[in-house]
Length: 170
Image (cartoon, rainbow, N blue to C red; front, top):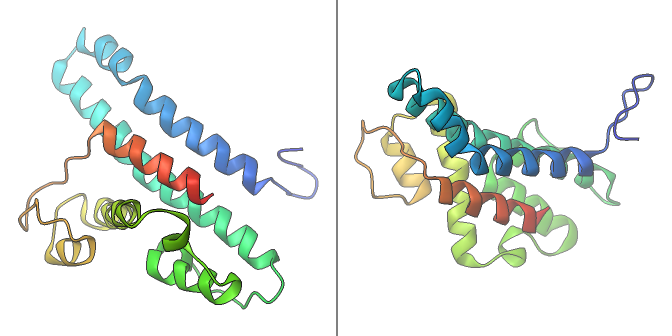
């Protein structure tokens, strides 16, 4: 079963798949949401759609984090992991390399790894800085398209790219 209310067991794989589907659904239904809310307020429609896009990034990062935590800890030879280690892309990659001899950089292209790094840094910026770019974001993401103090602008295509990359790793 996906979830057992008696013992609390849930399927990390199914949760992962459901999250990816939820994110894609958010993006694929943006125009419907925008049109429906625009009847009342174009500003509110824009804010709502922006929020749906921005909340997709933490959804993807947490989905990958949770899946990795569940799979990693069940593998022979796995060591104890620190809290949220799989929210830190390089640290999670290093754990996989140490355990199985390969990691994210082996499972996806270097271009996709760069995109994923940007995704993880965008999540950090959205969660901890309300989406306002700081120098740390620029340095860690390699995203030089922003200046310090600007607000991140996430595109629908970015979310679809990120979800495909996360799916490939998963």
